[in-house]
Image 1 (tube, rainbow, N blue to C red):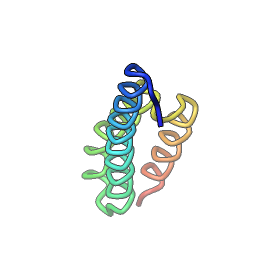
Image 2 (spheres, one colour; image 1 turned 180 degrees about the vertical axis):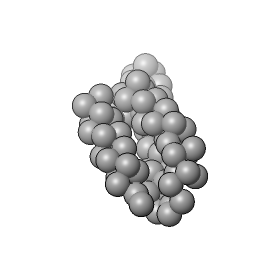
Image 3 (cartoon, helix red, strand yellow; image 1 turned 135 degrees about the vertical axis):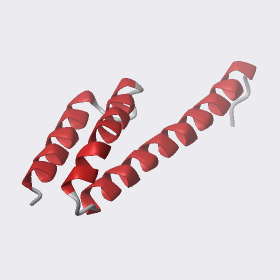
Length: 84
């Protein structure tokens, strides 16, 4: 266990960040799942900008890498465009 005051604070901060990052990541993954589970193309297209924004925010906060964000967004757009 840490013995220095600053190290104990760093542990507290990293736990907060971890919980926050897990929340943002899980919320975004659930939004992606809901988007791809949709069947109405108009409704999915209306929801798409919100999900894209969530993915961009994850990359901005360094929860995911910017290239992963781009790959995920690309895959989502392909799936939405392929909807009948």
